[in-house]
Length: 204
Image (cartoon, rainbow, N blue to C red):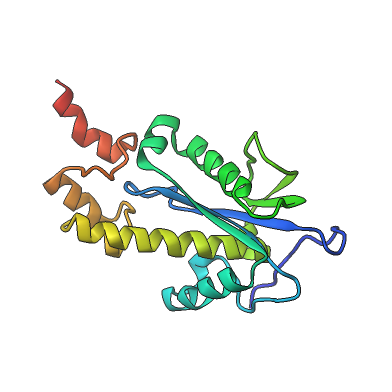
């Protein structure tokens, strides 16, 4: 079992929001960012980085997080915003927006990764590997992942042939093959190289 390392220098009762995203790497679909303030009086067992959990386990934990958290928010950053801002700035924007959308103002945000958005509604710390070490970030990771997977499954029904329900927009061999055969759909990220390469010949 992996040992969890958590923040220990906070005063009891400090409202801490964990923030994480899902979908930075895919070629299609939005980035989804979640923020969660957990309730110390209602602990949730089994929280972990969503990548380490099975789809079934995420499906069990997701409604439990929504039910027991003091506050949570889930934000989608659209493909058009990703193409306009670039993926890094779109993710930073989503993190700021997710924190601002919380019903409670946190006293501290713990954000997965090594970078912080410039404009935040509260003090924040970047936590490398936080989705596997900080329970609030783990909870955010699960909410973001489940929400995005559901969205990509819905897009699969609207755009059959791309396999969105299986690969969730990531650049798998299947997805790249579908892109080559069918061309990009409206939900593909034009600023990402494999998609841009298919569109560039149309510019001449």
